[in-house]
Image 1 (cartoon, rainbow, N blue to C red):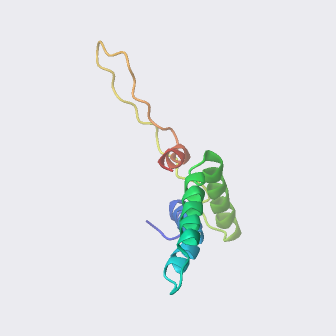
Image 2: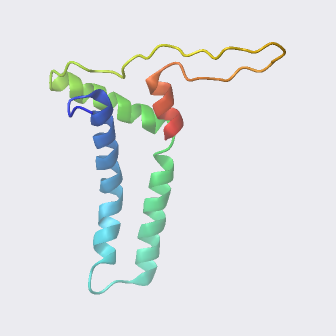
Length: 112
């Protein structure tokens, strides 16, 4: 994976967002004198923010930030690579079809 690839940019943006949410909690839990009630509140708050990050809108915001970063840095990749649509052969007598994501962005949203 290249450092300038769009997938790498999105991954680093996601890691930056997660660290921004968890670093204050980590620092507080490592301090010498902590209030356990405050620690529980900080952990619960971080947990809820991480759960909220899994929302489709938040995921789309991460992708848009990655596109903006790629544009600002004049990178060649500014979107996910398009992959060809894979089709499975349907055997005689089969009624169901396997759903395959058509774009990399759909796969990213499903992963989060």
